[in-house]
Length: 174
Image 1 (cartoon, rainbow, N blue to C red):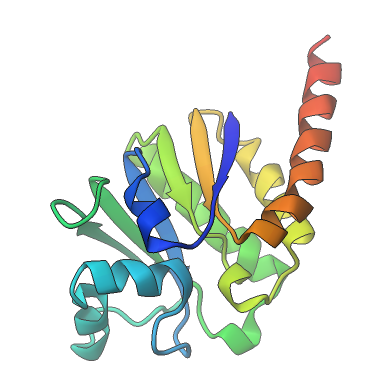
Image 2: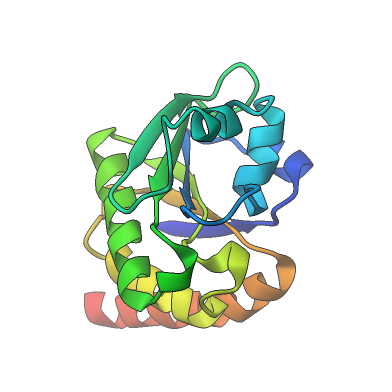
């Protein structure tokens, strides 16, 4: 599985070629922030309208599929509730990531873009988020490529974690 990065920039998100994008959102963070806020703008407020009408809330275990075309370059936008930001911790991160991965597996998505839970709020460090994410990814070999939405500084901090995981994987396969 290949891990790539893209900054949270609308123009760069528009350039991505993938099957789906998966983003978490919280019950108590409005307006929407990070990549989801940018994509909501590109979708002319479609996600915000779902929230205002009560069709989505960000509650834990919530999962929503929104057709992304023609306004986005990918077919599917998956949204995953992460509960209240004030209750966010490593366990919530792992639960949301696992739900995201299982959902993408069931949808047979092999190339995706991910927003890691809590990262747009700096509620979890880049290194810790990457460690936990890679642990979860190990149980989901169906994914060929994932692109994580992270600012350049976080990308630099996550890179060594990814490289250590690759070295460990190579050592185990020899």
